[in-house]
Length: 340
Image 1 (tube, rainbow, N blue to C red):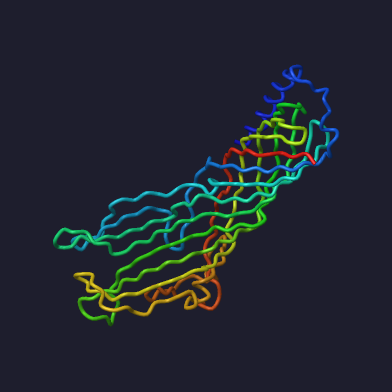
Image 2 (cartoon, helix red, strand yellow):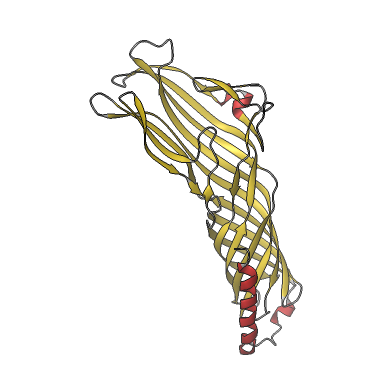
């Protein structure tokens, strides 16, 4: 994909060079304006290199349905979940400077909001003696990215007046970004100490924010600018971005857990039991620091009591393996250019 833009640039410039005789290039209407200009653009990007999503805690990126019947657990279906966080809406504001009629430099601030992706779905059902199916538990997580970046670039064009093709290429420097993961879970269990013939249903809803490590990416575009007045142009372009991102740390920002004692046969509610909120989470449950390698010094889980995970040290951030996502893609942009 990286070879696409140099080859496209050469082809476009050859075509444009041949067509310059068809346009009046003697006009210097832009000379009355400053060499600076502003651009505003918006567009939608599509995934071009989908990959496997990272784990959500202990849950792999799979859509898994298991079923308990006749004392045996069987897999009903299993599917690996793939995709990209590069698909979504992007808007940008650019400041540019015309070095001459052929070259310009631009600096663009972009805001990006990705589509929401299914990251994991685990579902367990049970077939009872009457042959009917009942859900014992499920976990489902969706993730999306919000990001702000700065993209300096060089713009090359033949400098035509009315219809001006151009090539733009440069780098992408993310300034801020978050991967948000929203999870809903339900589990039916029979812990010790509850009355015979009852069970406990636990419902959990939580939201996590994953912060990234600093990174740098690549961007390139092929576009055409149409003059509509001495000061205004309308432009359309196709843009490719490749922005790999590594996870740095994660924090649970919202958490709500309810527990209900039910009749195991009928599902009728017997009574509400104490639950947990975000204030009840330990430091290790709430905060995670990512590492390239986990070893004996890493703060990893050693046990579990109900929904509470026990770590080697509950009073410091837990550790997990780094994950990688890409917020790049292939997009279509359209916008307005204003010469100052």
